[in-house]
Length: 511
Ligand code: UN1
Image (cartoon, rainbow, N blue to C red; front, side, top):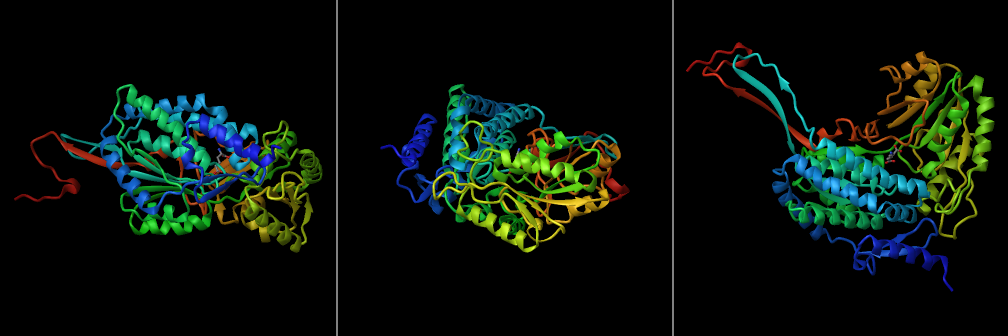
């Protein structure tokens, strides 16, 4: 008899094979991978010994010394080929994302689409790595800035976007002339192996086209926290881009600062939306549902707090409860399912703890139970609406699960103040048709987050904008806009084309 367990494991093995991953890398190793879909073990990944991680960093540094001299548009060609390979393998990789981390089909595919999009962006960018020419105070001088490659970029990624966030960093880092070393989450090594195999295929095509790509340009190291630490501590890693919890950022940030290395930190979020009196409630309902329940509440940008104006509360909240009750929870690859599993038991425990803490504050909870789908070791939950009377308790922290804390407000200023009154500062939104409110929300006196949206939810940002947030979210920016600058170093060049040597600030120093 074929059990669910063998089916999932077999499906994963088939996908990995199709994607060109060597079976020796995920059989018989010490890192057990469990699919949250069924709770079954699907692979035993081989971990990278610490000594090999250090070797990979050294090799990446060696590769960087060559890669930095390749013209940026030629570097872009490698990323273009990678984007093509991703297009070819979108379905398989998307499915693997669903099996390994439990995303519903369209979100698994969407994750790969996000990778393709950032490749396109980076290819264009490879011809636009520009600096300024600046007026100088000295005659017959010219002043300009040049952006140079930085070095080895270490990437630490989280399970919830197991491949897209790496791609944001990798695509930019590569066109900017850097070498990359990737430590994926211990919970999602298989999608990392598959992505890296796809990347290696692009690398082979690049070399077949007649270009040179140095050995060690991109490395994948698999294992636990100690490998992340190895990157953070290694003097040849110039930048670490880390996605994960605020606790992780607190450990990583100071260590990098101590050796004056750069960091891009993309940490927790406790994102809020404000539903104002003039809001289009149909639009708001859809925006809230996707942002709060999508990815089973496991996005950094997930909507966790909702401030609803008194005048619309009693219309919106019953409708929202209805939508919550109708949402299909289950195997994320089944048609019509919108909410898949939590990643593991620890996530479920965190969910239960938040529910208990909310109850202790006297909150009214709708939903919030374990759903009877999946096996004993799979953790599906019914998304919760938690009606709070005060901004307190579990509402002030990020629980990586589908819990939406809801509160009434009567004055927009109070709503904005509450929305800002948490540690994190990632994403926020307002639903309103009052342009004064919308502008206030986006103004200096409005939302203090890195992302402030109007009439769309908090999650699902496009790659074209800079992604990241303030305060305990870590301050880093990735992906679009001018985020590329973090992956390069700036040199200011002053050139004297005359025959005298005027000094700045009128200083005289005649010898
Ligand atoms: C994350 O959860 O770490 O904006 C990233 C979004 C996605 C990225 C989320 N494009 O929801």
